[in-house]
Image (cartoon, rainbow, N blue to C red):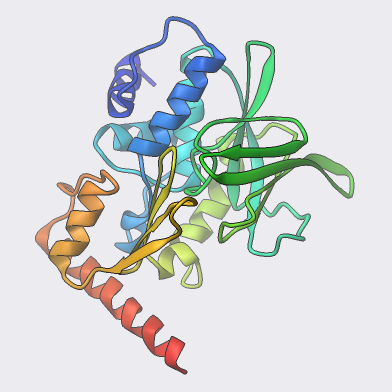
Length: 281
């Protein structure tokens, strides 16, 4: 990957190129990434899932797009390595059941070592921590959100369990052993193309800032603020829908043709009506 791609990536983040790796710089990079590059699956919804090569993802981010964990953490790891950070990729998994101790590979996690410390770094959870978490057992709070880390021992493998008790996926397990991007190819293919995949079935965009989480699921726009509680609004027109995507989540829309915009809205609207009908059953 050329230096020019990384420069464009850093411009998207609004962060100047650091002179040397530091914990302070790492924290600034993660915060900027979460605030400026959304977790989103628009291209998967349109049936044109992008690959997870970090260079492709970095180019997409520079152009104003986002992605999901394999895109977000894969490209961020490449950027951090380019900037001199000691970063490792790890096979992980998110689960709705907080008691699961398995690791099925549906998530890519990162760890980074800098200034004598080691951190869990993750810009691919959507609703995860705004800043890196020290990779040691304990409870952590950021902006009113609570998290925890604990060692994971599952059979012959070791790793870590990250807990977010108020998220839709309250647990993320990941292995201590380092991984490569090739380890996620098969799962990316499944998650981005299988009919039963949540990424294929439901549009989702998330953006994290210091105090809150913005979430668009289908036609429901939600802001989660621990101090004020969640507030939600139903988007009833294509104009409202695309304005939220562009302004709340910062996702550029110039790559979508008028026909693709119509198709995406129709698909999201149909899924929303089916969801409403299911709640009445």
